[in-house]
Image (cartoon, rainbow, N blue to C red; front, side, top):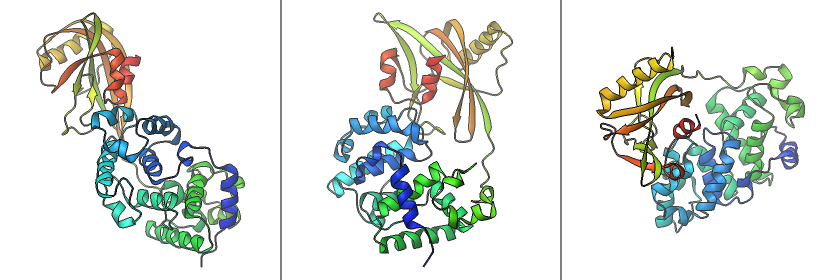
Length: 355
């Protein structure tokens, strides 16, 4: 038996939990979609995506009937697009094999694309009210500090013991797991936790010994790698309307697979903006060598940064009219400005348009 303030945690949660859209309907489908979106993504960023996604696909069967081209535009800007593709794959499997209902066993859930132990535990505990632990970064931090424990294996054992113990005390696994996640998000922050407002304060080992900054074990972050790109925002008047040239990335590219973007070329080094004319000449030279098309009436729009995992991209943008076809970039198409939001693209495209 582990000593833990279950009652105090539950009381705190009922008082201070956030009003989040995925807490209004806690069936398996809504829990699953929200947990996938929340991976590597902040809550405030997820909310509008979640609402748009559920409006378009209110049920798992509705999602299963969609095409990838219907799903990816709704994910545009959220990142980690494999998540969206796996949602679609899993929806089709569940509709075909399980009559549109996500399985209620850990083993069956793990067989589905994109569902790992954490997501399976969240679905089983929150939607099906079964005693399965969840151990995301927030919960791990709470347990690590409370029990002064850094070992991931020990933390997993603690999580399993506590969910079982809580269940035996007639506590709802859904509420228990969500209260831990909420506490880690709102109170037990990575830096500067607000310990004086924490319901676990009296029993917390880290608080008693003032060791909050030492728990949990810090992991080494990958060193940031800088890359430099030239981006061509080519425009042309077609049938009376201005259209932009976009190309589709291949499925073999390092990131942003099969998404539409403005044509980009990676540079060996950063372009030095001594003056705009010199930069335009350098840009013209780079694209002319690789594309075999005529770039006319160039205008330097500026540059911006974009992060993908531990890569930091600096992207220089030139707007230009274009003669001839763009070779060596795979599938391309001309798209009207109002239709750009309808195609599956990353936020790089949106950032370029905003310059």
